[in-house]
View 1 (cartoon, rainbow, N blue to C red):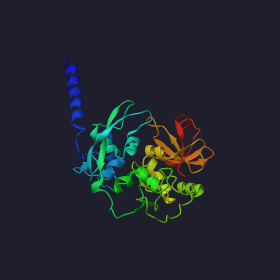
View 2: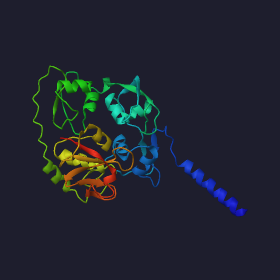
View 3: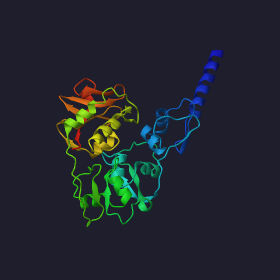
Length: 316
């Protein structure tokens, strides 16, 4: 009898402890506790380490007890309701946000979503972004692409729709590159710098320099890379800007049937859809930043990668 009572009390203690360590999904900030790390906090709050770094202007993953972290993306614009959208097969929050000129954070906020999971047939409220506080000066007729830019982001900053940006600049895809000068009106005349010729051999040579660099969640420098951080860094060295996450790289890349040297090969590992990617080297080999290996070269046909292969995209 005594043993039964002790077990019951111990179980109650465990349950109580479990409840006290959780943070409400509606909290906007989190106070760092002893034993915390960005990875632990991101797991508890349904965020990525990269988002925590970005939201709090952190240059490293070092945090301290008592530090107050924001759990929401800083905004300098005002959000109102634009309409609704019914989720279709193949949709993701990032794709819907891109197509409706909004952000994943605003979509989640206005629809009270606590994760990125959506389902076919779900009706989402679409926010409308007031760009009056983020637009560039109205006298600007051109915009020079910076690292990390996308047509959607430039549209947010300038107030020119993605469709108009593509029309004004004779763009047939969403691909842009650092240093590119974009017209913001239909009658401006600019001289574009020549597009840097894609050199697959140079890209591969650059990528191989970092073999052995350790895996660091949210890392995007030679001191430590995560999967997409490695791809971003290597492509950037060639003057080519690509999105930051595997999912958005997959969405913006051009699908091809057979991988060529320098293309990106994608895999479904930790969840359905594209969750990991690497640079194709030829002969079924690819280089990537693995969570357990760091930057390494792997064989796509081995027993682990072959059943997880999703497809190939080209950024050329």
